[in-house]
Image (cartoon, rainbow, N blue to C red; front, side):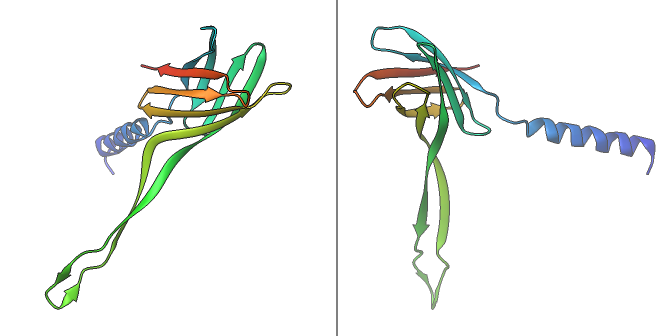
Length: 135
C-alpha cells in the first residue's frame, strides 16, 4: 500500500476514535434547605455519582429509565408484517447515595446533555436541589 493511502487510513482511524470519546464527568451542585451549596460529580461512563455534604463523602450509582415499545403492524394483503420492538432510553434517572455515618440520599433528576436538574431527599424529608450546568 502506498504511503499516502496508509497515512489517510491512520488519519481516518484517529478521527473515528476521537468521535467515540468517553463522556466526561459532569460537576453539579447540591443545594441544601439552608441554601448551602455542596459540590458533586456525575460520571456518565460508569453511571456513578459522588457528592460531599457536611464533611461526608456520599457515593453511589444512578440508573437511567428505559423501556420497550412494540408496534403491531396492520395486515398488508394476505400477509402480516413482523412486529417491531424498540428499546428506548429516557432522560430520567434515579440514584441512591450512601456515606458512612450519614443518612442515605435518594435522588431523582432529569438530564439533557451537560445539564441536569432534580432533587435528593433524606429519609427524614430534607430536600436538596440538584443542578448541573456543564459546557
